[in-house]
Length: 254
Length: 167
Image 1 (cartoon, rainbow over the protein chains, first blue to last red):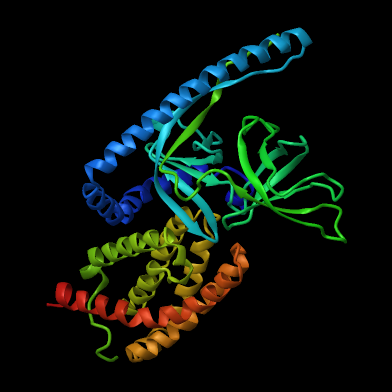
Image 2: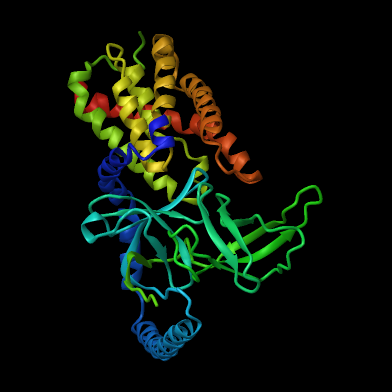
């Protein structure tokens, strides 16, 4: 227990146990898969056509945004060159994965993806959905990966408030919310402010949206505010997610 | 001894025991996907306690250790923590299993309720689960749910033992 709690010595043992549990998890999710299959078969053609049309429109909009993004990336590179800074603009490789299993118990909050060691997924890789950061890879087996969600009580992520740039640590609560720690009482934070990853610690990439502030409590005896935030990513609903590569595909240095 | 447990050797029912453990793990895995999972008892532990009372020539510590490790991997808790809890409860059952066997199924349910209350207490001390008010109530209601579930678990396992092994 001590070896597992204080170190990573038993990481391989845990991976072996998770590999043993894979067929059990598949058996446990089988009834749900059958239910989904049956209900999907009854989806009408009209609904599928509408979905198809909606997706085509979405792709068009995203392509347009992508063009803007490319222009912005070039602009940033040009400005960095002018300023003579050593800034980096990273473009990360991604892998699409499907959520196979999820846990919603008060001991841990995690999801299991259908990509593992054999697909090149490694521990500490970051997982996002179309909205924002979901968590990071904790353990891998040959065919699956377990992702610790940002709402897990043991999970912490260095962040900054997008509007003010103030840095803090976002910790999970074990429920559907997160808390933003180490923001002093005199800070200009507001309900609705967006919290994004700060990139400190070199695990989470900088600039990805993580949560939105939903409640601020001023505790008189404490030097820091109590800030509750709601994750932006759809932690419970997401089916397809992206696993960000740890290796930087494009790294610009001046 | 009463007729509440069937007189068979462990070696005769080994495959049934292993299958029941696997089934218990599948049910536990299904439960952790549910929002109300906090109210559901650990079925693998209930099955372990049943077999501990059923086969009095074995200690079942190895089964308790392995099942505990798998529960740790399943719930992402410290490896060995659930093993320790399972072994402690198995040890208590070993001490009192002859008395336990003499009880009726309903009396057994009451005893198992206390076992699970102790399980919840150990879980609370070792894992400090993040519980809000409603979840705290459900957390302490779980032993009561176990008392309702136990007769079904015991009767099903007894029926399977009688049908598949004892003939």
